[in-house]
Length: 240
View 1 (cartoon, rainbow, N blue to C red):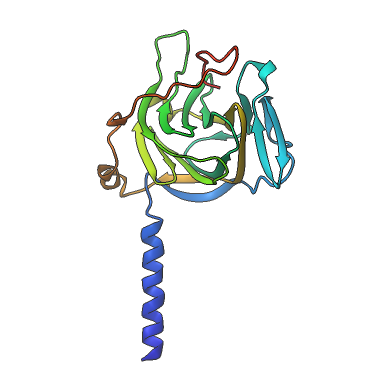
View 2 (tube, rainbow, N blue to C red):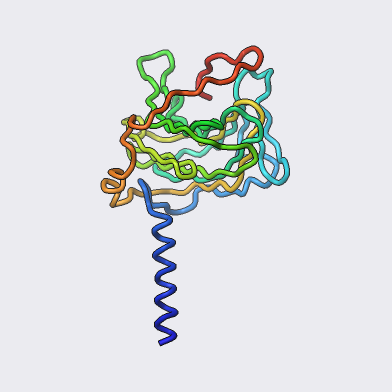
């Protein structure tokens, strides 16, 4: 009897854990890249702009005013279907993002400020007819010094972005192409990063049912917050 009760308890705990980790768009597979981000930034990372350093056991990114561009660091990986997870905390910066490039130019990102979370397809040609498409922009309160979890899933023509409990999805034909150079951006000073994992992914067979419980693309788009004016060169910028 005691054995039966013990097994029942284990099953209940397992079901609870499964419910807490309910699959969204993707079913994660093999690990492509994994790092606690607890060492000084080095290859395979390539920092295009800004200052990237080890501070108190985690990687910190900071914009350098002379760059006149947000801090950017990327991995060289070419991806297809994947799940990316990591944690970040604001240490004074005005924004950060998880950015995915296309073969040419930008593809998609999760843009985060202390007061908002945006999941979007990026402008893929800047000067051409293509435009960014905001799938969702949520108001948020992301206080400095507090760690937050980010998850990005891309499978086929769809993406899901999640920051803590804020979740949204969208789709675009551009997402069917190869995804390049996943990376972090930082606007201002500074943002800390830790516990990064990139995994292969396959489509969740239940995705069509799952997405009915999520906001429709464009349904949750709050007004974009105005960035505070801090010196020169803080006008409208292209996505990093």
